[in-house]
Length: 73
Length: 294
Image (tube, rainbow over the protein chains, first blue to last red):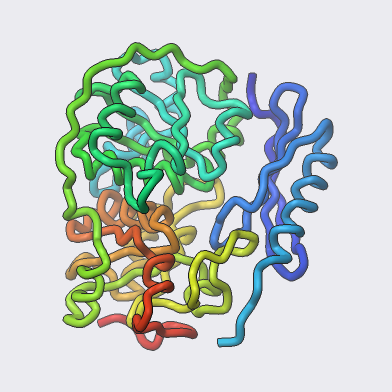
């Protein structure tokens, strides 16, 4: 098997830039979300379609990102 | 970047970096052990390169009781169980442009493994190129392994960093994102805050690890890397201590400086900001870097 139709796109979630990488392996679509400049994985999700996998990743990312506090320096 | 037989030319130690094509051509080579090391350990189970083992950075590549790298006896056991002998060529790759693959590489060098390499571009490039994947775990015949070291010249501990700061004898390279460096945030967005204070070690230069990579996950050219670090006064003329939050992003930068640019005196401070930012009374600088390093 192979990863098919690998795509990346950047979106903004509550002010944070997020990179979504999505692809299909077998019958499942996967979506990996990272926070671009740090480049850390925020979440990994899957679904029956690309849209579903991305939507799960966006929801999980929003939940995690809501806990990040920004301080004045 | 030119490539001959999959080995990248132009870098200081080109043999430590192999292309995805080279790996694909060597999947059946019995003297090569391919290992995937991901930030998110679930990634391996989506599908991995045929024959690749998966190592978990947070259970297999660290001491799970005290905060430390994997102890020597457990490192030997991991290698033995992975079918890796002292003469095996180990090729590491992983997600996030090889973050934790570089962390594994660093630990393998601490314990003296001679032939360890990174797959340029990591898991991302392998997937994007539509290369073969499998869910199958490879069959492994355990072998005997004798670790060397530990070579602590590759690893900085807190007293060494404090002494270097006081004496001004080493350049500190903070490879975190600009917002972590300034102190606006305590951890990468979406990750748990694991330190009490934000900011950076006084005098550190901020050169985020991701600037060393192209969009496809591969490393930038030697010229681009020299320019990136040179602009911040990092040119190999004095020792460098790299740090990040927990030591994995900085092991990526350690790899770049030591093996791709050939700067010999580079060490990874894996205590990093989760140690320094929790110290009582430690000097902390916030905001942007004050001035270019000498």
